[in-house]
Length: 380
Image (cartoon, rainbow, N blue to C red; front, side, top):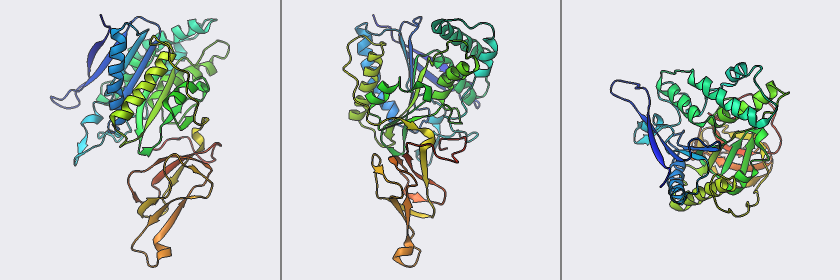
């Protein structure tokens, strides 16, 4: 007999007669200490993650039928029922909340201070005891909250479901991109097997991106508490990552099945699914700092013609694109060259080929932190 359960959580109605639901699929022993949490579609207009979850459900159904699930695995196939309903002019627009224009993957709950206050004089001498205590305390803090508006309730619900997980994978995609992963710096190099198994071309590390995306809401608690209480052993007990599954149009059963298979193997190797996984593939590229990413911006309006593609290695000063303005007089005036300011790997470009001054056209991962990056290390 399988362990799979499906539960619907009802969000508070945002308008008369309108209440949305969040679906949670759970496998394994709900009382087990080891736990995985995987969600897709927090940015609801990013389709690849939905397909990966579809294929992952098939794999986990088979493993569950064979009694091979160890611990518990939670899947949230559609993590943003608010954004998935935001249609305008035949386009799904699920990145920003129509109500207040806040990015759905920004400003998630930071409950570190509340946990720290409750931990006074309670921490123990072993990592295992402290992990259990911190998770219990985080649950108490979350249980004391009662958000009323729909988006705040959703963010609270997602963190409540994920706060005690050993592994949290938040599936996203970029515009036109190669696979890349965002991780907390303290999780590296222990998380090398995740990036390697996914075939990530780029792994971007930061202790704090400045905007509290969902993965950091889950993982940053641990190293912040370790810094606050240096006399007690507090490990980074949650491997939380934002996984960017290539670009927004990279939707096929072949790729979806491949990505789901890689996640399955990663979980198998980590001991959440019984069976012998093959050796970890070689890591394609070493991790680089998120602060080393150059956001290449347009200097002029016009049509963008990219001369380079995601995955290309770029030299400092190399032209990666041209902006064409047909209103200018003379061929030399109609073209504005877009150059890289650093050496690195081009991992994402904008799918919209129209430029305006200041618009981000591409992202390049460099090895060295850049000056004047500010506190917000992510794009909007």
